[in-house]
Image 1 (cartoon, rainbow, N blue to C red):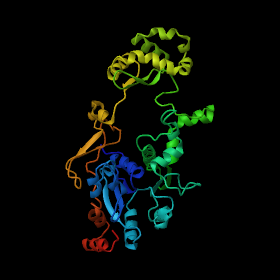
Image 2 (image 1 turned 30 degrees about the vertical axis):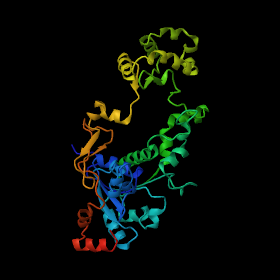
Image 3 (image 1 turned 180 degrees about the horizontal axis):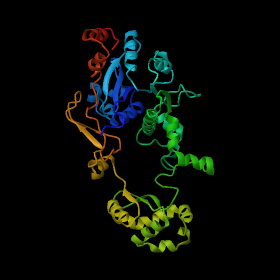
Image 4 (image 1 turned 90 degrees about the vertical axis):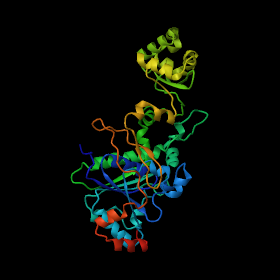
Length: 397
């Protein structure tokens, strides 16, 4: 079966994470993604990551994470010949994605109003920190800036540690996946052709619906509650014999099952635990009572038993631990490439978390070298080998 976006050409003019993560999803769903990189330097992520040697080679692990399956060409949009060549390429594209600061593409002479004249059906997606308008439009936006501005940091951690940064670039990835969703929807429109304005700040706030609704509609100011789920009790992370155990006994019947299994049925007779609201008000005391038994055995043992009887539970795992679990390792979520050019060894990357007709979509090609597909892509537009050499020597590519 063909993938859903097969036959769609996407020009990826993005850097680092939000934009590349958007195009990572589009590539895995079948789109041909051409990464249009700045001549001479490419995506900044090529020089980012925990392996200095790969950073030096321009194949940093941050770049490897979300650029598999893409083709790479280089172009200098400040050079008239480079810009002219890019305008030829745009005539072949269905989608363009960029995450420059608002106004940069216009100053380069390749903004939406210019490009839609060249390609009226073009879907142009601009990802930025704060959107294309408003008093913060020209502020620089990095993931942690958005985490702080959105309120995410204010509700992460507990009363002693908050405000606290989420442990991965949540704003960049949420912004990227929001853009991929919007682009996929726009591709279904008839006729095609639209400008998509994705604000990372608004994308993150959109995922905070429960928190925002509590404030807007119940007057409850969001707070940092650590590992406690304030909507119910007992619901949160509990100390077990080795490590933490998450328990979500959100229903009354689960509360009964939990206390029975732990041999603590007498807790149900206490007035301070009689109802859900009572348990919420006295959640810390309840947590301590449950932990007197939970601490006697390992978290993973409790998780198996409690899940078996209908009490949602799970041990708190590290990243290496979960990657080794059959639930991840055996479902095709990770994909490996052998002896990747520019890296010199095998590379494993995550895919999308999606299965289509029982199969996890993946891309066949590893992350590309900078400009790896210059000859192929530009020759398709009629550029001869001699012209390609001249353009490179002149700084246009």
